[in-house]
Length: 318
Image (tube, rainbow, N blue to C red; front, side, top):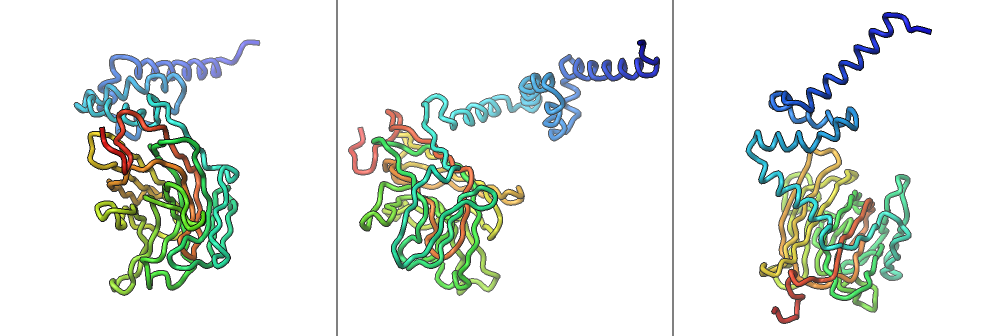
């Protein structure tokens, strides 16, 4: 049965419109079109269909050439791929599963609970903890010798359940991720040599409302030690962390590049810090003192040391 004229006309018009748009996006007029469109609109076009997605990299290259950024754009793209461990065949630990971790108990004086929350995130609640000791949490131990941590990404949130946490902030610590060379104190304490945590501000030193800081920490020589603030954070908010570790032997120290982004996208922090070159043996998640923290999408990239990496601490450099 033949379709009505109006329907055939509408179908033909729709097909012609789609084809014309695709030809325009693929043809010679795409360059002036790209010069006219804002970046947000250009980023949306590939979502229309697979044919438009197939042209995505060509359009990105044209934009970079128009703006004179082709070299830096190519470098950024290759650098992003490099940090996936593509060339060096990095291993990956997926810590999203609760079963991927082991429970790390503190002692009978510290009450804590590790579980999954309603959204499937790792949840660690510390009820009470002595100053100077962590309050229990989760640990992943890595098999192998001379392992180097390459990159760590994860999301976290926290909530301080201690109303007096700002009185002595130097003994407080929430949502801790530490990288260690093993355990001390009869296997009950992480031998952490670097990591990230949330610490309260000092209420006695500021007239403003107390706040919380997401900090880098490294133990040992004064050139490494001492907390380094990355970003001011808020209880209940979610933050995404990306930490990249550079072991280049041409550098005097190891360098960590840490970036933190709030889920809202309105808050961003970044810092670059020295770290001691020590072999990776374990990753720990815990609260140093009374608080609740959640972790999600924990990924650890690592690999054996290569000839391009600097010597471990205590070894003679070649």
